[in-house]
Length: 429
Image: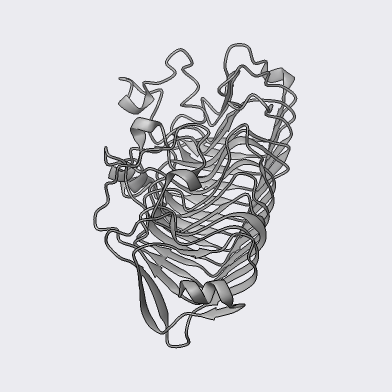
């Protein structure tokens, strides 16, 4: 098989199982190669004791296409020796026993490839320019760290400045880490010009989709459920709250729109590092009777500014529906945001503000309105922030104590420095 890869423009895998003890390597600099499955079905199997970066790996390759085959790993147990890489270490250099790893090059296509029981990442693209991932199926992949919590593995990872990419029409289920993730360190090139659309994501213990350190990404029409499950895999010691639509690093000119998630035991949308972008028409719906018992319940939408290279400005949050979250609908920092025509229903499920103080409400005791208000304007989202010039208009809010604590602010925020009008606030049990 290795000889065929070195010599052929089209390599058809044999029918049945192809067992590997070491990687199939695409020679450096290869151009114009397709690896495709047999019509009767082809499965690459990583045997016990497999040693190497991935089932298939390549570096500085272009016009490489993978089609219509399966890759099965050797995940005999969930725990592994992997925690997270040290800061600055590329994931492609850290994790082994991946599915497909491509480093550098251009025009990579992955279509109708299925992955199961891969110990690390089924698909990892590093510094690739031009990538199309479509109709991929991932199930039962990824492992846990030595303490039994997720180590981010199990899904699709793009890192170190992947540009001009699409991830569409794929199904990802039963993984402990992030399902779809763009990741780069602060000193790395950012991901640019990407589209993540029409994917189905179910039962993940970390994030469904995380856009990290990126520019001009469009995340649209994805669907999912059971985000933050199973709860015993969630990395609460590492402060890794599960999120349906997550953000990290410096992310700009990006759109989250038309996505729908149910049973989100964490946050719906995290905007830590997000600026100059749009969040519209998304739905995160939790059954309040079930959600009250979930450990990871949080704010519906959380603004933040931990990354020193950005300021939280100019975000449009419109037409979203969020239901069943422990705290408020929005934790807001920054300037020139627009929060309009949203529904924040069955918020403050933790009953913050009641007496005695519930255990879930023990944080931020110096800011009593922070966890019990429908929309809370703050002065710190990781770093100090000025919060003014925002429009908060025509939103519907409902939840425990919301009629009394609908829109509130911390000391240092002048509500009159923001436009607040036409909001409907209703208390509920």
